[in-house]
Image (tube, rainbow, N blue to C red; front, top):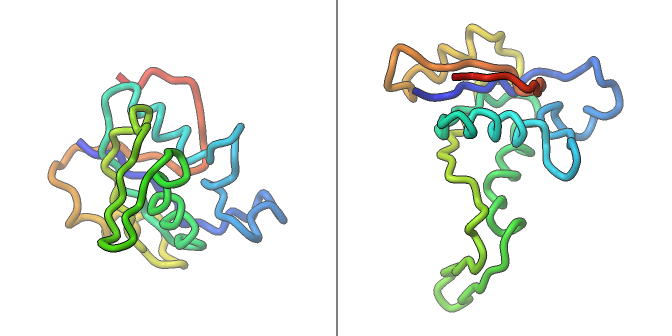
Length: 137
């Protein structure tokens, strides 16, 4: 079972805050809303995520692409470009699939565009801008 996160909207309700970054990347503490959502699902054993990207999706892609290097010490061998992470015990054990589903695509269209990445008829779906203290089990 995978968790589908809709993270491609315009985020207009937050005005200037979302002119530069997408709403799911606004920070709560030192982590983006999106990370907090994923942490909640992970707490209940759901560690495979499909994030439906749209507006400013490149910022979300960059966050995950650079996640390990920003959160751990590492050694890089420039001769072969291999990276050894030193303290990645606290790194989340998540599998994250990032799919560009279009800037103006509506919710149903976003889900249709990720259909080939789903391996079950039963999955979980949430928005990328809401954090709550709920029991998902």
